Length: 218
Image (cartoon, rainbow, N blue to C red; front, side):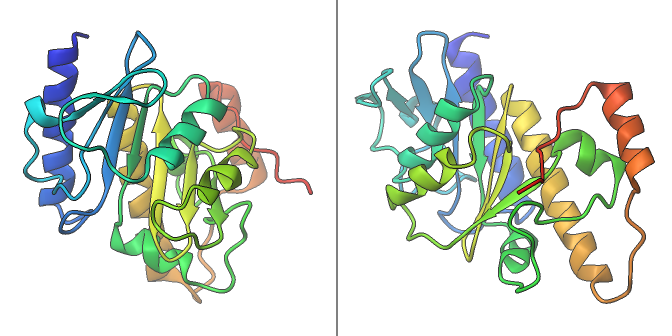
């Protein structure tokens, strides 16, 4: 896909996410890794609903701004995911309400923030890690991401929001949407003993779709 098409795709998906209320105001950011090792990334303090393809930040492989507006302050977060998820070509970070609400709950397992409630959560997300709170833009979040050693494509930042890596921008967006819907289902059924998928059902998904799920052992 040409860089021009990628710019248009970023703006189209970003506007869709914004218009559905998945990231308010000027929150959230999206990046795509280019064939030359550089990135396209949404600018700082920019609403995802009103992006200009020509003003997206263009970074070189060393994360230096080449053209466009100043990039999001979450560059360390994106860089750490790209470094550890070698197949990742796109990253989406939002402030969607149900995922943020989930990150506030005391019972959440940091190794599996959500139970396997649906097959599509398992297929698109696998599992979701929960990290402690870091100030937005804090470079320390990069060390926390690297500490996950690339095992998770979906990561929930406490009191902040989710970040999802995908092998395409479409894949990252679809996984983000599935993550938010599963967080919503969890909150709707919390305390009601919902019936999650069991181990044989998960094994069947893994075998059928060739999934690789994070190891939850200590």
